[in-house]
Image (cartoon, rainbow, N blue to C red):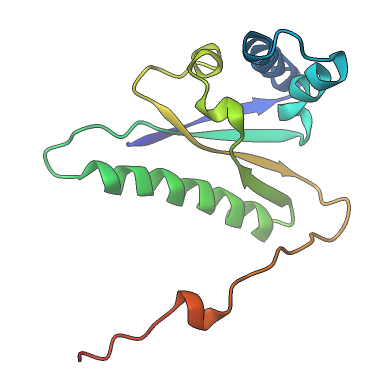
Length: 145
């Protein structure tokens, strides 16, 4: 499998927050306490957070690009499945998804990367949509000419 999941729930979300804080303090030693608290709560914003970890590597049959796409497909499948079950879900990456110190503390190996963190919970309000490009700007038809 070119990807795997790390599940954060209960107090594990807060323990992961401490790893995020450690990385944040390394980057920003002069950070204000309120900023540190925001970082501590990163994975506590939803009752369940699933990290989708890409472990794409050279393979005799499967190009690395397809393996990376597979991790993205796994993340999107989690979002769709959560919504289908009546939950709210959001797939995000933030600075700590790219910080090797934080990733090591969360249990990733050197050859692994975060494809995204999928936050899952109950919606507290209807989701707001973001602006989308007009369809004709992102979809074309091949005509054979």
